[in-house]
Length: 393
Image (cartoon, rainbow, N blue to C red; front, top):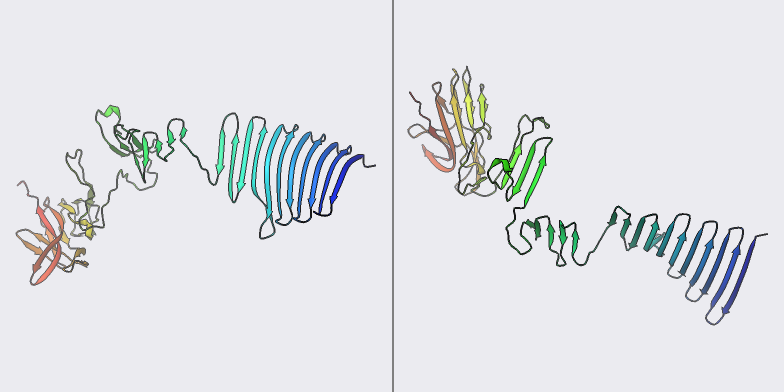
């Protein structure tokens, strides 16, 4: 015994080749009642079905409408499920079709589930997938593409207007930039951008005023690197690196008024022969034997480079020329030995050296890229110019 009672009525239309069937199944074995209405159309290969299912075993009530198109191999279904065991209400619409590889894929799906205090929705169509999950505490949205129409505001700190104007805190996105203009188009707020790491005592900020109130002054830029941990094993802290290259004349820092306070230049203590580095300024020689210092290679963007050399040791100090890049007579870059102008218009060339003859003597050398000096019919492009620092005795 199957413990099942079925009641159905069938109508066959041979002209249109359709079969319509209404039915009720009472299935005691599965604790289920099905009420359905089916229509089969063999001409266009479609099957349409409406149904109601009461499933006592699953504690679920389902209402569904399904259309199967055998010619296009698509299945479309609308449905509502009330699931007492899961405490869930599902309202869904799905469409499935077969891809070129014969796999059945879902091309459109929308689903709303209510379970406890959570609502979720999923939409999938033409490769665009999105999902919304809502609980009493939060709402999350994930999607490959989301379109919002109209103004969007988030906690009064992020706002996108209907015309696309985006506000972030005190800033407005302007084209491919970020400005601190107000809603009325004026620039009167002290908006600022700050990056800081208190663990490594680093601070970088720009804006209307980024100096602490305790400083008693106002500043629009602040860069600090007070790291005591030597995290990168460099043995040095750098706050700012600026660079200007690519043009004939390059200015890394241009001061258009005001003074420099707390000015200091890096010291280099030297006891052996070496090539002076481009980042060295105060060269203090503490050698006890004779040494030779070779001037650094100057690039096209190094015009105006300054080096100061002081002899404190008992050994002599000689200065030799290094190769440099300059502009030739045709305007093209060339790599040659320059010259050095010293004393009373004397010129150092080739492999000759200039000696700092006495202890405590010093000199300052300035690189002049565009000076051309001719000595014995030979033209030297670029030269170091000596500024002698007088002794006080």
